[in-house]
Image 1 (cartoon, rainbow, N blue to C red):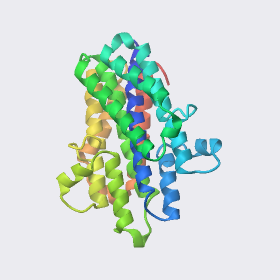
Image 2 (image 1 turned 135 degrees about the horizontal axis):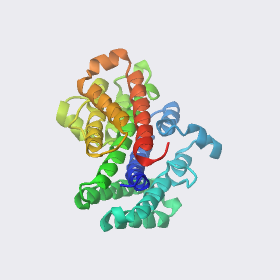
Image 3 (image 1 turned 180 degrees about the vertical axis):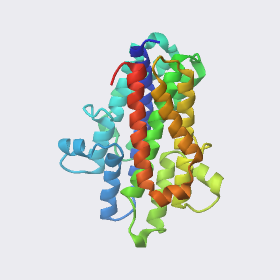
Image 4 (image 1 turned 90 degrees about the vertical axis):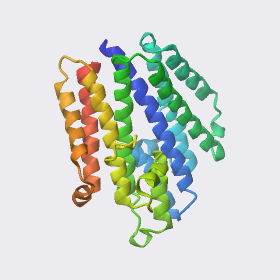
Length: 312
């Protein structure tokens, strides 16, 4: 496969996953804002900006951080490359450029999604309308992923699509977990309280794992068990371990001429996740552990760009 085509397919899938992740983050943030004090409200509004590392860009465009301006920036802002609007736009553009490598069902799904996105009135993406919009984004991402898996030939296009999807998903899971621990850490008197419980439940729902947590642990929500599930539990589709299992499998199927550094790093990360112990992670500091994970994911993305996609 030509590197420019692989690049289009990789980012097509990565941008659809990013749009879904952004919808999940904003949806949970909207729900969490219904609870808590003025101080916790400000922290919860800042959390999505911290997760996406876009706080500086936000305040260049907006003077005040409110629920409305947050949604405007992260969902609808055409100049924000990580907004839902931009992700859906570029996913469609990349699909158009690689149309001869993807199935007609994949193209029709992305094209229809973009047409519907452009038709959505901005004043509808508020209040209850915002929840409907976020659910629509998730549904369109699910549809695209299902159509891709169900229609495309198992070849290089499929492999680069999976690579983009799961690398982006791993990055998002690590960021969400890190922000809850590092930024939304409650005061001592709030630990174990109703607000703390609701924030952990919201985090689990943001990665579609609330029911999975109940099925696995049948217990109240404990931070160490949440971390264990989202980092090490391979049966949990959005855990770091599950994502890197998919990343390494996709890379194993891709045949490149100078990709040993890519595969070596991916395998190193996968092995560390396979043999990690959650208590040792907590003893060394969860934030420090997740920071290293995010640095490794970023470095792996850079190596993939250089080795396969013809860009730096």
